[in-house]
Amino acid sequence: MRITEENKESVFVWIGGAHLLVTVISLLFSFGGGMARFETGAPLPFSAQAARLTFEVLQWPVIPLCVMLPIELPGPIGFLPFILNSAVWGIGLYWIWSLVVWRRRRV
Image (tube, rainbow, N blue to C red; front, side, top):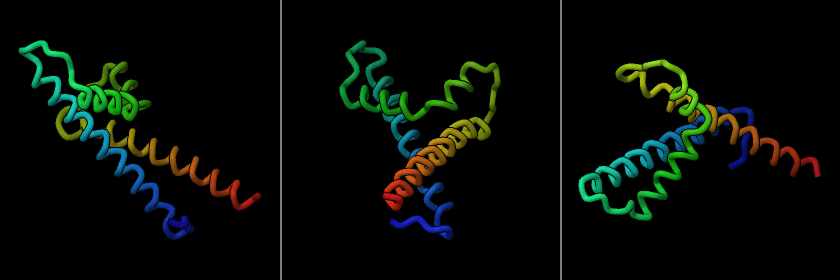
């Protein structure tokens, strides 16, 4: 897909939306895997470990800051840090992608 001035905002939205979707799926999958073994004490399966690691990576940088700060976000507002985190990732990946494309055009 070629990024133009008309569609650069949509690229950011798609990257952020994909990040949010993968974050939520990995959170739910790792939580489900942990709860399934809660009473048995069995080791965590590889798939649940992979989902947990994926979530640990994708939650950075906003979610750990929210955990450290004594702020409670009740109800649906609690999803705001996840959305903000995905926006940060979307901006960052778009910026990196723009730099790579700019360098290719320059060479």
